[in-house]
Amino acid sequence: MDFKTNKPIYQQIVDFCFSKILTREWRAEERVVSVRELSTQLAVNSRTVLKAYEYLQAEDIIYPERGMGFYLSKDAVKKVMRIQKKEFFENQLADMFRSMELLSISIEEITERYNKLKKDGS
Image (tube, rainbow, N blue to C red; front, side, top):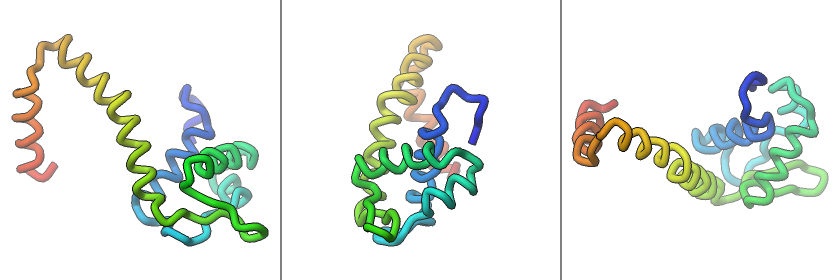
């Protein structure tokens, strides 16, 4: 966790969880790390981890099993990708378009660079 950034800690925890889900370190229908375990692992308050888990639960990415903890939903990967795509289009892509306009970069130039990077395997 980066305590010096403006990004709230609970959101950094959500991002951490998203990473675990997208890399398949956390698998569908399997128990995820407990609130206590994750708070110890990340050296943060357990209430902050709980807030992140509540967000994930509200998005149907994890679900609670009484007395057992939280489990990853069957379609968690799709849901995380949907959330991250939305964030990408609303934030990073919008920023990129603003920069393109300031620097007079055309869509054709971007397409050309994209195709080159894709071809080179970067």
